[in-house]
Length: 204
DNA sequence: GGGGGGATTCGG
DNA sequence: CGAATCCCCCCG
Image (cartoon, rainbow, N blue to C red; front, side, top):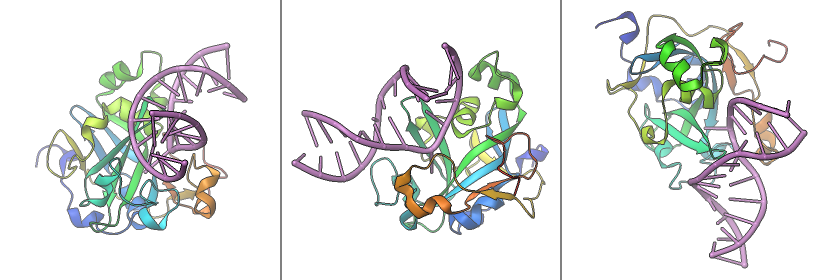
């Protein structure tokens, strides 16, 4: 094993469903080439059980990666300009996934600044699901990539444990169509992290 | 083939 | 607060 932030992860770590896996992804490190960041905020999307999930109404051309084996990346394009990245989890066929919502930049900050723009403050380099994809250079070409295969795009462990008591909240950006799923507290973050996508309501 | 809507972001 | 700007997906 090389550098500290280069320890591979077991695929079984992602075998459970998203609401259980999501908080355990906090403090892991997402790497793409020279750029990397620590995961500080995530949301769980639970497939057929979850009206807010892209997979709620079954498999489509867009969401098929979510139905595949865990440990792969589901990338989707939205609002005509942004990509968002999810870690597929759960058993094959269950379409459970965890949206990565914010990273604390760790390495390759110059690269991130070049991609994000010269006037973007560091705090906003990767604070948001679209921003972090832009900062790390993740796009639709990475849909389906295996994060545990030792490639340039990978998820690794650097010794930092997941927080024992993450802060929780309701998921961001859901429309009224999500119904009661909007009340689920399936947003998780590292308590007190200044790198989250938006301030925490009440810091609960 | 048409149209409504989007797990967002930035600027005015 | 609204525009940007595609693409996806369901329906006819």
